[in-house]
Structures are given as C-alpha cells and as structure tokens.
Length: 402
Image 1 (cartoon, rainbow, N blue to C red):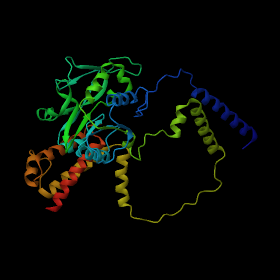
Image 2 (image 1 turned 90 degrees about the vertical axis):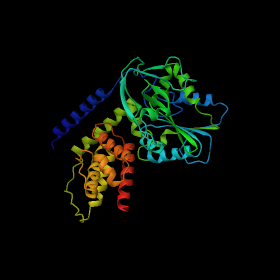
Image 3 (image 1 turned 120 degrees about the vertical axis):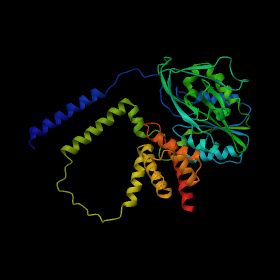
Image 4 (image 1 turned 135 degrees about the horizontal axis):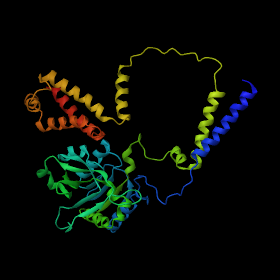
C-alpha cells in the first residue's frame, strides 16, 4: 500500500470518527424521573413500589414485617406474603407460594395475568380478557367496604396526560355464576380485578393490573383508599414483602449489566461506539491473517438427541411457546388416533374420546382451549405451556399404565 493511500485512509477514518461523534452527541434536559420497571420497594421513580411499601408497613405498623425476602417453604402460620410478579410466575415459585398458603397463611400475588398453575391448584377457570380503554371502573363486591360510586382509574402517558387508551388484562370467568363467589373487586359486574381462593388452611389472593400499585398511580388520590381497603382483607401476625427479583431465575436476572450503564450515559455511549468503530477499522486494515486457517476435521457423532434439545431450547429462548404447543397438539392427536382409533375430524371428538379413554370431558376441553389459544398470535404464554404439558404428561402416563 502506497504512502499517499495510507494517509488518505487515515484521514477518512478521522473524518468518519468526527461525523459519528457529532451524530451521537445529544443535548437535552435530563428529566427528573425515569420510566423503568425495577420492581424495587425502595425505588421512588414512577414505576417503583416505594409508596406501596410505605402504605403496607404503616397499615400494619404494630405488626413485624420483612422486606425483600425470597419465597421459601415455611412452618409459619397466620402470616401475609405479598409477591409482585415481574413477567410471569415461574413454576417453582408458584409451587412454593401454594405450599405457604396451604400451611395456614395468606398469599397475595400481584401480576399482569392470572396464572394457569394457580388456576389448576384452586380448581377455577378464570381466563385472561384483553381490553383497551382510557378508563378502568371497579368496586369491591363486599357491601361493607364498597363505595357508593365505583373507583374510576384514568390511564395516562409518561407526561401524566390523562385518558390515554391503554391495553390491559382482567380476569373473565368461563363459569361466571360459579366463580363469582371468589371475586373481591369487580369491573363492570362481569370481570374480576381481585380474587380470593381458600386453599388448605390458608388463602390465595390474586390481583391483576399490577401497575395500579406503582408510585405514579397514587397521583390519583383514591388509590390510597383503595390500597387500604385491599389490605383490610388480611389480619396477619407477620408481613413478608417478597422480592420480585427472585422470579426471574438465574437465566433472566433483571440486574443491570455494565453495558446497560454504559448505554445510559451519553459520554460513555459515544466512547463505546468509537471503540467499536476503531476495532472495525483495525480488522479491515491491519488484522488480516498472512496464512489461511487450517481446518480441523471433527469426528462424526450421533447428534439426534442434541438436535431435539437444541430445537426445544430454541423455542424457549425465542419466547415462542405457541410453536411448541402446536407440535404438542400434533403429537396428542396422533397418540389418540393410534390408541383409540378416533380421528381429530370426528364431529363429537371430545365426548367420544372421553368415553373411550376415561379422560374427563373438562380436562379434554381445557386441552382443546389451550390448543386453540396457541393458534392465536400473542395469546399463549409460558406458564400456560407448563400447565398444558402437565396435563398431557398425566394423560400419556395413564395410557401407558393401561
């Protein structure tokens, strides 16, 4: 490479660095708050849980409380365990909370969706109802604590402009007349926001629309009163505010990485991009090998099992449980046809299969509903896949034992 050409490349590289620096430099006012869900009881930002924690500890000011504990099996009784669910309730955590309630404690789960594992445990059939509105109207079903006029919650944007159309989920009963006895807070007399289920010697409470308890929600003053009325359902000897961080598991920790911090600081972000650009320039100009790589011949091996494991992990990591559910659907129909000689196109498939296989109709209907959910985009979640897999494994095991 000639000297003039080298100087030209260096000059072009420097000019490119200045262009990138200018493009990435941003001058703006730093906001006084940060909109990010951290699920921390000490976080005073809009989506933190500081105000909720203060309301709980002050409401039970004469009762000992434990902050940021983890869901662990216990011998305690007459205690209140409050668990915020960041994404969805992991199976091992759900089993621990169920065990805690069975021993004579109250468990309050606050999440975005009603969990299928909890539904299976308490034998109810509440299902997710997806809504979009700018207001949410709700009230308590107990006349002793209900208001004469319902609560009206206004959704707003990050500039606190009210009446902004928002997507949210409530609980709808597949059998409303039977399940409504569990409802403690209802919306429009047909959907549930807050429910109670006796279990073992204790109770499991479930509250959807968890952001009603974020700091910014208390800009609407009635939410202080609403939170206290929710807490009036409990009379504990000890209160445990469980850490939501535990629910992510070891593979999905919400802790901030060093790169998260670098990208949040304008100066560090510019330096990071310049470093990457410099590395790319070095790769193209000075990092060429002088000799070809000598390939290493790998030994042949049986990769069938590794292929199956890789495909399963791929669906899991891509957060696409509906695809795996569709494969489970094909396997189910194949096994049923092979065992009981019933085609999936049979007009009365569920009843005929139930008579031949002795599988309860309600179990088959649940499986069919989950298969149908898997065909609809963005309506099938990981916990639903876990629940579906449990039921299918039970059926297959019983078939093998026959």
